[in-house]
Image (cartoon, rainbow, N blue to C red; front, side, top):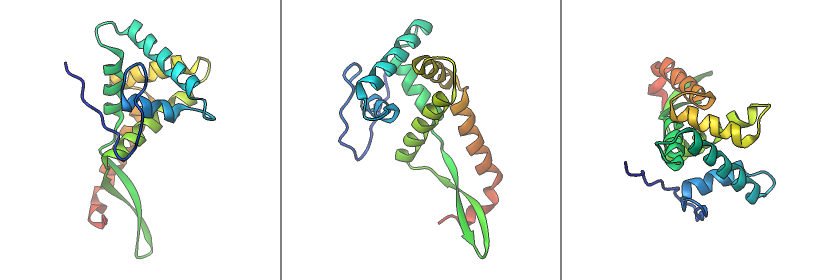
Length: 158
């Protein structure tokens, strides 16, 4: 199966050294603390090694890309004030925002967990998202459920 080519639009982003992927480079930048990129790279590559050991038949980069693709939301709700009332209006999500939300939700799910190293939590969250499970997927499902519930207000979309 061929890899889907990911583009990170509007940014002069260097690809990561191991996989030569701009998506991985962006993800590493997003999990980085205090500008310590080498630490973030070490954590990410350790997580990818854990994934490679646990899922033997699929390359870890493909697991990562499918996990990001599964977590990306199609619609979201935005607050809109009409008349004196606030409505949660469902809207389509742009590709750039889909990617940033998916990365943010995976990062938040990993940072919320305690008791294990960040690399282990990241690996387990990515494997769970690859299988359509996990905290990041729950966040996506909640957003979609809220948009579905507020479909009646779609005519307020701007």
